[in-house]
View 1 (cartoon, helix red, strand yellow):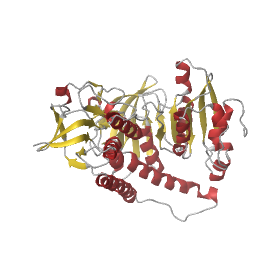
View 2 (cartoon, helix red, strand yellow):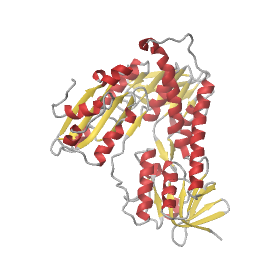
View 3 (cartoon, helix red, strand yellow):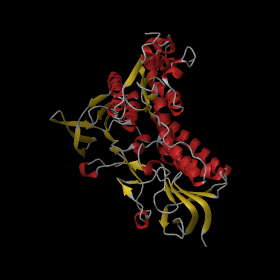
View 4 (cartoon, one colour):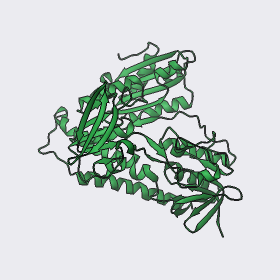
Length: 463
């Protein structure tokens, strides 16, 4: 006899476990299926452990600047094994937290690989010898690193890595080539450079961090080069070959062929949705470019079957997955769900950090808008000067006709902690007048947000 539930969630990443919690809060009998660790890739092998590594790298790199703060240290060095161990401990702490949340919310955790079969209503979820029936089944299976075996971009765990191998190596490579300059690629480039690796980043697009505003992208390029990271942009990867000492990467840049040699290569060329071996095709689920096609509420078109998060397509962000999951389950419950079109911020945790939300200046112009743009550099911000964090700026983009804030972009120290202010403003449809009338605390780096809003209308005070 099958186990009966109101909701079965497949996948326990930030999209899946948050969806399960909200379902339980709404009085639904809920189960969650996970084939590996609770918390998914984000908590165990992505968002969280990478931030732990990056913090270690940031602290170590700051030792080079102790004299600027009137400080000194007799000896500097690092234990790479301890750095990695700390990262794993942080991940384990978050994993234990999700385990606690499942128990607290009376969610049954089913360990194993799920497969879907046609049911009387929603599909039946088969896990080993168990059959789980539910009124609603929600796919939250996430995604994995994209590889290109045809040209050698396939991890072997030793010389060719994805993010997973890059998190737990035995030692830091002396030389490293990173293929791809999105958030994942640049974060690992930033970390390994902080610990002394010779790092070269290869990007096929015209500029690094290609989804970011062009001004921010160019500023990031300059800042990373200042730290010693080398770039080949734009460049096409022709072939990666393993050698006795590491890897050999054949590229073409500016019409000229070049070969890069390194101990290790990190492949960061995008991700693909986890849609295989679940029986989706047999159920008639529509899949495009490895992602499940859904409507605005996550429905797949198959009765009772939904998909949220990375498996449902870009942007591939943990907070977007959680937001979609809550929206989906509240829609199922008949509530007026959260606004699925709320602005979604993006963050890159390099040194310096990059954060953005909404339209870039170029995108606003492409949409036929007449943007008013403001900028304010941290080099004249009091808190930034006191902290010795002068690099970067805040950029705002307003609709010239309505005054609505339609985009914000930042590069600098801890800007990932600042972007939410603009995200909230956009969610509440704040205008330039409301932002300009908002009191920002002094001294804070967030004052640059206020000044950038003023600057868009020729009212900047401290520049």
